[in-house]
Image (cartoon, rainbow, N blue to C red; front, side, top):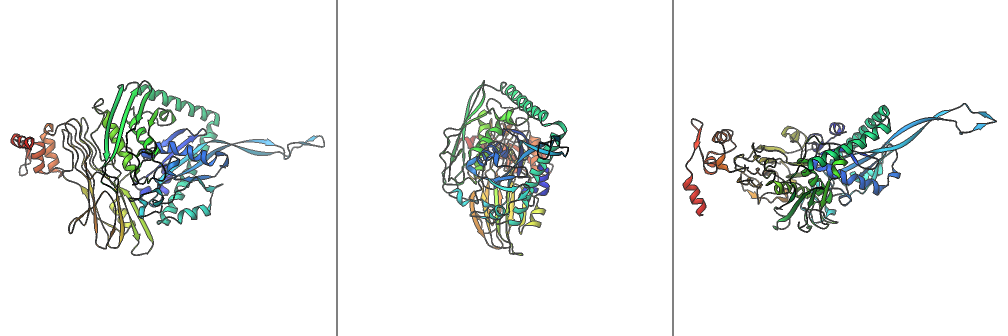
Length: 577
């Protein structure tokens, strides 16, 4: 399914960045198998698909049908993430008489084969569409309520008996700027589900429905046994931490996230009581987004060989009070809920770092770092929209540095290459590079952030929906925080500092510079091997001045040698200040 969707999609966001996920559910709507494209989607699919099917009514679904929805309060996430669900029926044939009777006392020999169909399960895929309407191109922005964010699709039948329902299709496309790309991406989602139905039917024909169902039941039971066994090995107790999203997009007031993990004989309970009330601002996470963060953290603590299905999800227990930023209610905006969701993952890991120091990294980028822009194409006049998320620094680990410029935690989208972006969209990428000195210093430093500069030769709308320009990712065990993110308009002349959640109207010749944060450091910086500091200076990742000031290492750039510097006076002065 994932291969079919990616190869059929039109938009860069799906075909190149892989911003989608796929899954199979049994007839009881238990998740059985998932394609690990975006882990942030997988827990949300687990919540969303059962609710959508029950809301629509499984009795209203026939072979060849597919229902579409993105409803955030029905178990969905933000509106760009649209899910398509198809039933999987399998058939058995038997011989019957035309009227199933005997005529004139003689048995009718004119038999034919009748196909009987039974529901076996459902296939589903979720894809992030580059635009779903709303107040800004790419449908991201600092909105005050969900109705400003784009089209809300309750469960509706997009495909009936193998044919697209044109009225529904036209209605959805009528709300969207990037009609050509979106129409192609919807057809790719249909193709993915058709592939899943076809492959499952081939399996059912080969093995028989009864045998496949028995194997599904055993797979779920096996997963639960494995999960329980691994959970029994975790240290018992209650572990808590809190953290903040820097601001909500309308005020400078930070958004507090409170997280507590209770590990006992029953497994792990994630209690998020104490998180801030929901805001009239784009930082609210739906229940499904929050559930997905908790599922990701639990999975990261277990043997990576354990499958992810209902046997695992049965043990994900969470308390997320309704009406808070971790379980918002209508009509709260949700477009930036992923910023809150991925920060929550970082905070949960921070809570258990003291008891699992060898397993937990320092603070990561922990923001989606979303970019969206669009306008009328200067050559064709058609509306276009572009969306991507940018990488950042990962946290240092117990035995290694954090990787530079990667996605983190449940976020697994790939790079949008400059060449593809410039060929398909009227934008030029002037700079795409690592940000020197953005690492959180430590015995094992954090990864570097990323800089990407966008140049426009036409008027356009540009949205930043991100975070981390106030506080960088935390360090662990003496490591320092990563450098904060930075957002600028025209960085080389008449520079304007931009906020992390803002939409700006660009003039021809404008440049937007998006610079993500570095990861936090692990362990004291003075314990770092001078040869590693030398390597970072030679690679242009750390400046010679910072090597001396922060790491206490003097670098001779003529001979490329390193030695410990005498920084005792600097440290004494710093302590006095």
